[in-house]
Length: 317
Image 1 (tube, rainbow, N blue to C red):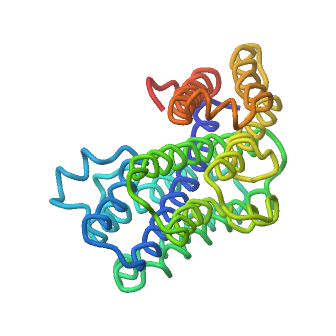
Image 2: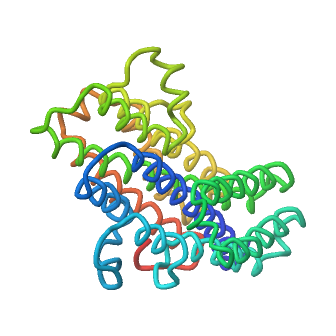
């Protein structure tokens, strides 16, 4: 497969996944904003959204304060923000258009219709008048894209590179959410939170990765921070866990193996083996923040290696 083709397929999937992840986080933040709290607490909550994506600096070049509407506008439709939902869905569609011959008609039409429908939603201001409905639509279109891709694509290298993009983006996102949310919780240790407030906090984190019902099924108990971390890092059958994402990367990387990718495959397997052979107790002892920062650095390194081996080389993912 040509590097340019693999590159377009890989980034089509990454941008689609990124748009969904952004919609998930915004939707949960919006729901949490309905809980009684002062203005400062509300702004800190929306600021955390920017920190997850490392977009604080760009945001404050254009906006004075991290209010609900400012952050939603910035993360939904701002063209200068390459991680906004509009920017991601545009990039996903353009990457799909570039390799239409490698996609089924159903996959292309799904990507194209998503972009066209997005223009209608932005023009009507749906993200302002009914943001929850808009975020649900974004998530639904991502789910549809993923389902149509798996259900109609030949299981060859094209599908492998699409899946690699999805799993790598998801691994990065889950780690960022965990890091920011746990840091925020740690900074609030001096304040006494009611059990109800603590429940809403960790339940919101779980909902942002579709993990609330899974948590209940796995633990059948109250929500605790350590178990949230364990579920989202080490539970191999939790779709958005770090373990599950790395497992997906390893499997798909094995299917497209080449002489040039031997070291990259070993690097990915080593990352997966480290998670597989550690416990949440070991991670907490090491320091969750330090562990996640190292993990994110390794995911970035893995992405660079993949690009150098198969795609169009880039200096930084």
